[in-house]
Image 1 (cartoon, rainbow, N blue to C red):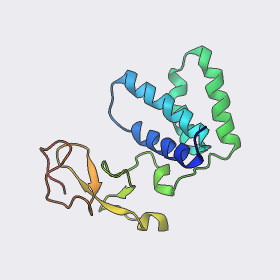
Image 2 (image 1 turned 180 degrees about the horizontal axis):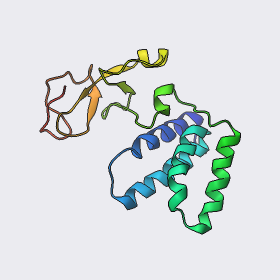
Image 3 (image 1 turned 135 degrees about the vertical axis):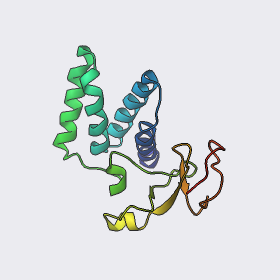
Image 4 (image 1 turned 60 degrees about the horizontal axis):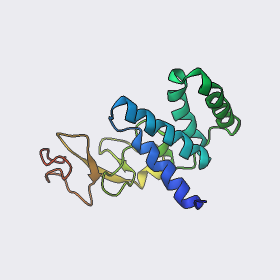
Length: 149
């Protein structure tokens, strides 16, 4: 049995994982894992979001179970256990520390977002980092080609 803190971390990390550009078969594996981990963590919003992606292409044998899980998410109000920025379709996070980030041009929509660190974004690859860890104008440590802005 996993403790609740670890279960919540796994649920959050799987939501980040499904945003990566992966081969379709790997994307499907990550989506299934994200649905399962968010369901276990009772993160109804995250589970619902992933289940809605999985449902249209699910084999008929699994569709009923997914629909029941989606209904359970609805019955629980599709609530999220994470701060508001983690409820968005696109979550900005540091590729090193996994902390939530905001892009410099973003206006905070909530008090929670006002507390977020600003991102340094690579000009070549999709990597982004906490600007306190990697200042703009440094070379990206992921691809080693782009410059952080």
